Amino acid sequence: MSILLLSGSPAAPSSTGRLLDHVGDKLAALGHRRSKLQVRDLPAKALLHADFTDLAIKRAVDAVAEAEAIVVATPVYKASYTGILKAFLDLLPQDGLKDKLVLPLATGGSQSHMLALDYALRPVLQSLEARQVLTSIYATSQQLTWNDVSGLTLDQAIAWRVQDGVDALSAALNVLRQQADDVFVTQAQPVRLAR
View 1 (cartoon, one colour):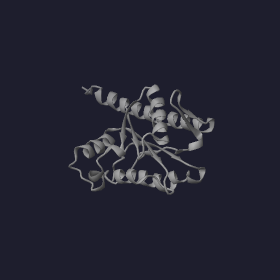
View 2: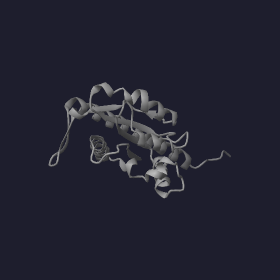
View 3: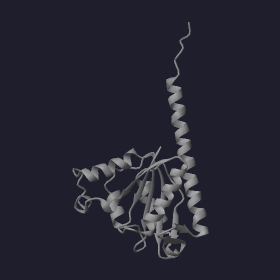
View 4: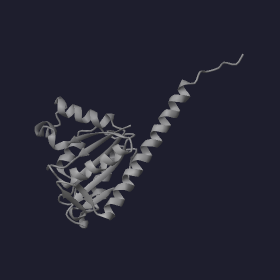
């Protein structure tokens, strides 16, 4: 099962990108394949004009369609998720997240913005018909410490939330995998006709 790490951060490097990579590494350690899409790397004109003839836009939309799960990450600006993430989500078809598991992540300067995930981003993800939007994870700048040598360190409280989110997504993916295997085995069984 493949997981798409979808970054809505306009900056590089960023706390959001580092948290997304951290979650991706934890999922990979559990045996899940992952790929990454940075919305900021898409051609701005094509993104803003919804130019579906642009190859980069087409590949990005296809990457979402092909993934079984999406980990979407955004910084919180002006009490909401980023405009570039909104521009990209607007390119997806109305059922663009159909049958997909989604784990939302956000970073911000203070706890006062933590509800942005639930009142701004979650409704959009649900309107795109996600199978399940898992419990959101919000981290402040103070909970994420970056060191060029040791990498990202998470405050204990947020580390537990991240681990819970990773475990929940992994378990849900494993259930989907088992269901798909059961369907395949059932379809592969020979049919015996009574005489």
